[in-house]
Length: 83
Image (cartoon, rainbow, N blue to C red; front, side, top):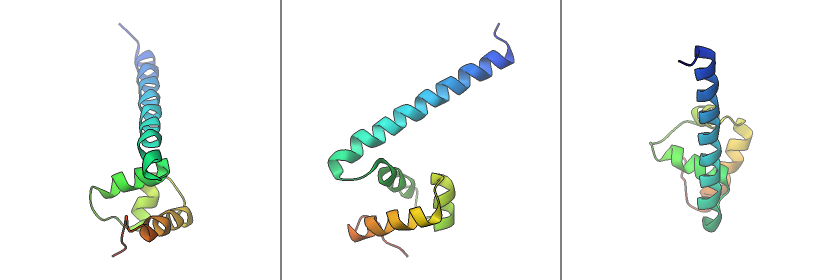
């Protein structure tokens, strides 16, 4: 039987692998659409419904100024709309 520490370490490793797989998936699927992986991630988050900028900043773990620039670029392409 694995110790709690060993299980925690194994779980942490598995979560990191999943995170890397998701990052690769965002990169692979966003490239043909002319999107950055971060823009693709934002669009996926917005599929759940409208979100405030503060919440989006927290969810995406980015500064609000970075998020504002990203939303500006997506808005120019009519992929998002501010309400």
